[in-house]
Image 1 (tube, one colour):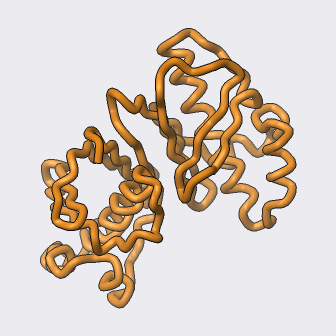
Image 2: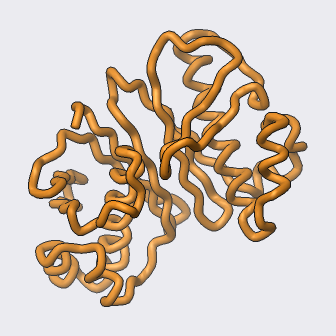
Length: 220
């Protein structure tokens, strides 16, 4: 279940409608420059959780009764007013006032990570920091118009994978290698040369933003 929203869509909503009391206290202590992205990130994640339980179990929770907690690096969890019978996991990402929240059934779809990025040119020095030699060659051989998209896609898939495993960017992205086929929208993922069974999807919206989602479909 994926939910995409923007701060523009929620800016007139009272925060009490979708934040718990603890979350409101947390929100009040966030730096002003980060408040909008934080809010829309929380909102998107809660809508993803809400829609999942409504669609699958006919359970309808108010958003302010769903509490998002971050206990691990880049690995949020949530609390509901009832006990869960199915194990799930969530992921959140935000960029420029847009945010995406996803929820995944652990047994069926594995761990999940998501990332949203603005498609942009990367400086070569930065590319060398997170891409392998083979990945750099892939970008060099691509058409000039495709290079910003491809570089952003490499970045976004790697970050999504790191979020899924709860490591964040403390785990060096060069340990992860991707073999991407843009034409068929296929990607193979390797972690320290070991192929990881994963379902990898991406999409572009508003012509300048990219969302990548990684589901690890087997235990690591």
